[in-house]
Length: 76
Figure (spheres, rainbow, N blue to C red):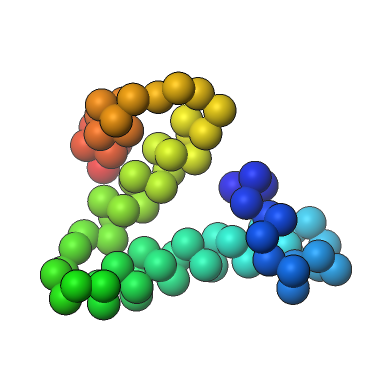
């Protein structure tokens, strides 16, 4: 999660713990709200949460799509 902290200028002057809340809340908003309104198809928010978690866990690796899929289905 700390890898995405730099994209929010409003978080620059916050304490470290508080600055981490900004990207977490942004991702949660995407998961719970925006995904439902993109094309009108109802999706399981936990599925997207697992994809994001897998991508975050594999951020410095050369993970394949199969790895991301396996992380998503086996952990969700």
